[in-house]
Amino acid sequence: MATKRKNQEQFIQNLTKNSKNGPGHPCRFSPPEIASLLNMFKHLCGPDKKKLDRPTFRDVLITRFKITDDFLMDRVFKAFDTDNDSYLKAEEWVRGLSIFLKGEVEDLIKYCFIVYDLNGDGYISREEMFHMLKPCVVKQSSEEDPDEGVKELVEIALKKFDLDHDGRCSVADFRGAVHTESLLLEGLGHCLPSDTCKAEFMKLIHGNLTLDDIKPEKK
Ligand SMILES: [Ca+2]
Ligand SMILES: [Ca+2]
Image (cartoon, rainbow, N blue to C red; front, side):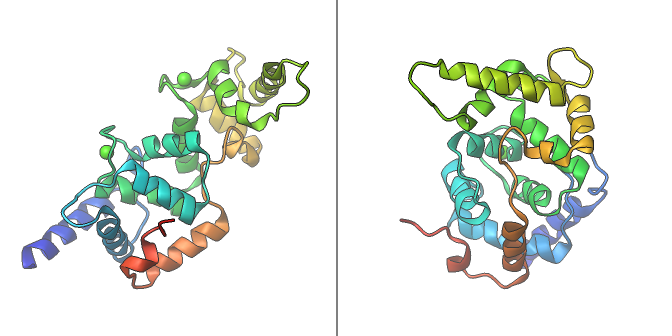
């Protein structure tokens, strides 16, 4: 038990050390907040497991953060899963939630860009915009080609995002666009929690949790 506690202390120390200004996903939680998040993590993983699987994480996204779109949930999972092993380890859970709950503008810009850059090549292309904006266009009459509406939307989005006019959106373009118009941050899809969800989750972190508090209710 004593070793376990020591391990956790070490883990928290490593996570907070230089982390605020570090590259990638910084950790902006205090040590007690991290301890609480680790508690949650253990409950969510269940006995004998050290990693969080995708279905459990998706349950958390739906019940706690009201992010419900299938495709975007998988993209959020991928953004959290920085080592790309299809599971979330404790560190990925804490760092990801740090962006969700305490992310500063630059953290959020980098995170959303990762969510939207589907093939990870550093640009959001027309095709990628098409894929993400398609669900926004409701099919109307059967005569019209439904893709036409989406294509129009892509061109509108590209006008907003593609500041250097090379036909795709780089991180710099994305950053510039969001700084001009903050609503563009989630302009290609809902992938961040609302302020209400954030406040509720912070209450969970600051309260002392029981398993029932955080296990997403099974239907
Ligand atoms: Ca992982
Ligand atoms: Ca891309």
